Image (cartoon, rainbow, N blue to C red; front, side, top):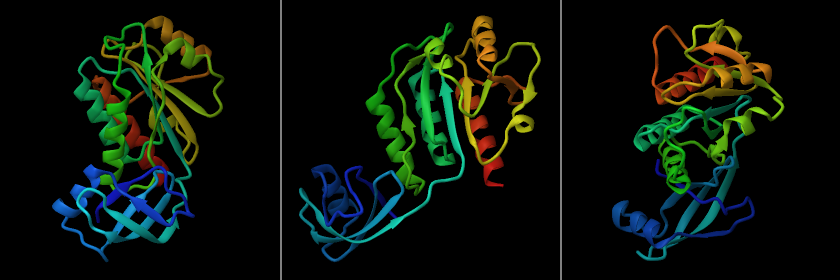
Length: 235
């Protein structure tokens, strides 16, 4: 199954026109012709089946023949992660977290952050590509780059955790997490959260947790956390 993405489709849509790039991919690479079916999602839970009515290599068009809505998962996983110094490592996290089933991501600026600028448009494309590759119908929400203090000052409305490496009292994430609920987890930069940030998070009702006995890179910690939360929720 080859999945396409179009955020502008609605359940009442009748036709879809593909961009020049997508048209070339459909007609030249996939060798689709008039009468063939395509599968498209809007990234909001809808899956559309569309029959090609024009297989022009620069402007492929298809008519919607069926629309199916898939209910979202009962759980919502929001990771607030400090962008890594090397862009490709954070991009790897975005791709894998999408495949695993993350709901939303907030890049955060911390005291020890080495990267303070992100490429939001590129990140969005990575999320879209990973969603299509893993055949999912919900696109994770990429929130704006946010300062740690601003992020942490928002009153928590659900389960909130902070994973850090300081030698202080922490519980395992598995022992504290309650499945099938919304959860927010903070993952710090390569130099970890500062002591001040950890104290501030705890004051704002974030529970300090550990992800295991080894020291993990930022992107590895984020993937371990995401997989743990999804696995516990699905089981």
